Amino acid sequence: MDMKKTAVIIAITAALSCTAFANDKLCAVNNTGDKNSAVMVPLRETAEKLGYDVKWDSEKRTAEVIDGSIKAWACADVNKFIGASGYESELKSGAKIENEKMYVPEEFFLLYFFTKDDSGKIVNYEPDNPKVRSEFAALQNGNWIGLTNEQMLEDFDYLYKTLDENYPYFGTLKRMYGVDLKEEYEKSRALISQCKTDAEFYYIIEKFVDTANMVGHLSTITPMEYDWFVEGYNDMEGIPEEEIGKMKQLADTYGNKLSQESYDNMQDIFWPVYDKVQSWYSAEENDTEMTEEKTYSNVETKIIEEGKTAYININSFDMSCYEEDKEKLFAFYNEIKDYENVIFDFTMNGGGGMAYFDDLIVAPNIDKTLSTEAYGLAKAGSLNEKFYNVSEWDDISTMPELPKMNKEDLKCMDSVSPIQYTVESLNNEKMLNGKIWILVSENVFSSSEYAAMFTKATGFATLVGTRTGGDGIGVDPIPVVMPNSGLIVRYSPVYGVSYDGSGSQEFGTEPDIISPDGEDALTTCLKCINNK
Image (cartoon, rainbow, N blue to C red):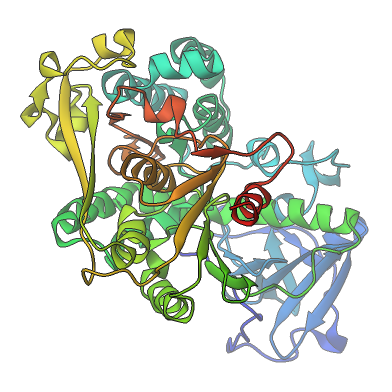
């Protein structure tokens, strides 16, 4: 089932006698089993032996188990268990009521609380600064598929072979971080051969991929992110007509049946671990983070100096915010159209969709077409061919001589495609008549890096801050679906270079005005404005 965050526990209307918990107490009885081979344990007896409190809600037919700040709910007669965050999970069996007593699968305690199976007994253990990933990997019941070691190795070999044939950043990764991906593969493969659970296998995959430090978008799709990727690629809001076919292809790949089932089942055991770790830290912080959530806004605007300087912070180029942000931005543009200075803050913007920047920031604020050239280089691997038809690109031998091109990287590429980035004026006039400033930092990456590159190359605005994070020239990353587990790793197929040959990933974009050490980009920008 899909896990969904809920504000309240939904009342259960099972047709069992309402006397099942006389005096609102759960009774202690001996262990039993069920047809799904789940080991069932009496909830109250087990909880109290572990030192936990139990509360029974007769109206909702739910039992709440409490260990300090860590809480979890078992719902009678349905397979639904809920952690402190409100995420729902299905376990091997739902909670059962027999002879007015509740039983739950033992994994309820093993997942939602800091417990382990010690020679057939559930016992507590004291975590030491627990991390979600390591706690997940250490689960004794961490299987949702039940992969054999041979299947794990087959998946991992498939992943590395795919990267070797398609991923263009092996050399860049070694120069930037000293990481030899082949060496990391060999070390990780030895660990996988000894894996005992699916969760441990996932942990090793994620650690291997993390050695890339997101170079070329190389990253594992986590159980926290999976649904977001599926939904995001199925949302065509703001997507240019010519890109819709590609988005559908990517959406179908992320949403393939094997991955959908694998991630759904993985989430059922992941979210309880996430909940208990987060609750542990909230207790350490005296619940300071458990206050009312703030309303998130992707675009924040303010007036710094009336009639002179306005400020717009854009947290991301999230295409799901496109229409809402368009309305907000254009209304603010009209309000500040004659201000002398308008500052766009991208310093915490990690990207999204290029069309967001083109349509909502550039097009309404230019009175003539702007364009710049770049180049996309690629390997001739089968996955690159499947998604981007690289065999139809120009042969790499046609690549022009560029002064800053890395010759060793060039030797690894097979195809090149000249890229023309063009933005036309929305109405042949500017909505903003003043000077535009864009603040950038090392956090600027992917589509926001494209924004910095385009701005610098065309002179659309003045860039202020520090060198950006890079990887802004290219296309949507390609998902690699492992054949047995359905786990997904994605990578950028395109090695993007700017007009002078410098690699976008490795060098990013240097701003027009560099902030001194210890000074934020906004302060630098305001100093420039005040000193004009």
